[in-house]
Length: 93
Image (cartoon, rainbow, N blue to C red; front, top):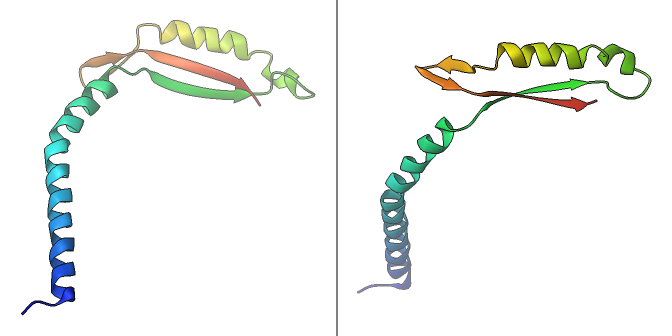
């Protein structure tokens, strides 16, 4: 003799099994894409400095310094036997 509670538990268990099964099936496809995407990205360095306004005098030399850093980092950075390009992103505070 089955009751409504037993049937609802069975349905929930079936749903859990189906959801878990779909996750197991989809996982290899997702995991194959993630490393390839991560390897192709550049290393981004953020720089925030006053370029306008009353404190702009403190940021006058930033252009020169960032150009020098770009020259030094032009070949990229090596990590784990791979070389990654470096991109410096400078914004006004």
